Length: 424
Image (cartoon, rainbow, N blue to C red; front, top):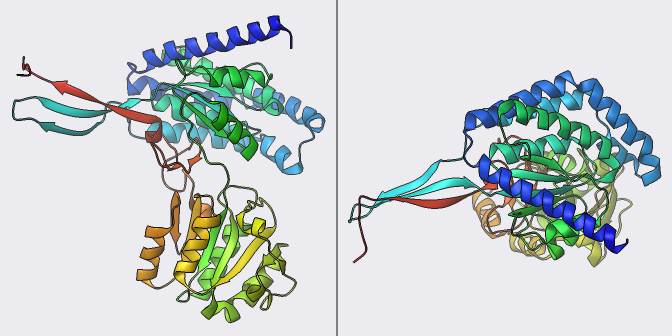
């Protein structure tokens, strides 16, 4: 890239960020009714312009072989009338949520008469970087604007036409609702260097949120000058306790692993208490094999499984995102907990047990964004938790953890009301 090109790209990114910051300042003063109008109008326009969106998406699908996308990636890229309707419904569901901005989180009156209020406010500007799912464009815009934030969207080059068509529709909805025109912006260049330029602009961008593969997320975390809301991987566990209902344990294990294998909340590892291993492992092993899952197990588990291969240390830490599962027999609840905290990714982990004390100890000691008791890991999702659409799942502990919906894109400030008090 020439110096002139670098300068032009840097200037483009700076202008994008400055306009987003100006829009965010304006959005902070826009009432909830206008933000809801944007969402409902956006939903209406998505339905009306379905043919236009499908035509843009066809351009991306036609170009997919040139990007060497896998079948799974092409499937995520594809829009259908059903997925567009789902996007429209998602916007309406976000609009129906309570307005978080201006909520008084808590308040008190001091002995000197000062009223101290803690009030929910927008974060400011969200820089959202994501890969080949164009439906995420609408979700991200909806959550950001509902929570009073401006958003800069950087989708993958493989979805460039779909994202451009969608953002044009959302810009039209923003204009109709009287929102600032720069509330939702798309990074229009596919040059990867633009991401680096934007990640350096912490004076304008409040937070970066990457959603995609581990390499993308690590790059953003390493380069960003602003805070990053993220998770790197989803190495999720199911632990079958000595007191488990084994029929329930089998249903949960199969669902957690097989319902959809290429997602971050799918199970990648199965831990089984030694007391139930003889009965449980042969039955669940057959069910997993029927679903085409390769089993990588420790020696104790292999003795009870047909066709399992030896698991390595790397297997216990792996996010397979496909038909492979690591399996280990443990001697106690605490051994299972220690294994999860050592090899897991702090994403989602489940226990199957009828022992309430064991469930409570597991929930207290497993250090993950979501702990499931007698339920599939697949439920760690904003929609399933009743948050509506989500912008991602965070395994961090500061600010946001778990599915990030509207409230997770807010902060707070203190507003103090007085009547002329001065400090002595």
